[in-house]
Image 1: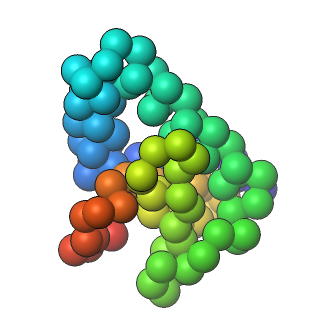
Image 2: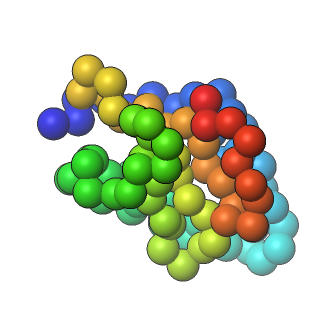
Length: 95
């Protein structure tokens, strides 16, 4: 069971940048992106081990309706969001 959620600095920065980009592209699109990120996080919380392993103990979930993936790990019942990547980018490091 997930008791808390933490965002790595890289994930927070990537999320903020993406929201700003989408909102600049079309009014309200940043909010829709935020809603889909929130939805993906809720899906992780329901079943954190369901999603594919990207490397070692790091998992990946595809965000619905947007070409993004969330990379995360679970430590001591804490969901740690490591990165929020556009799917066309190659992740260099997950943490």
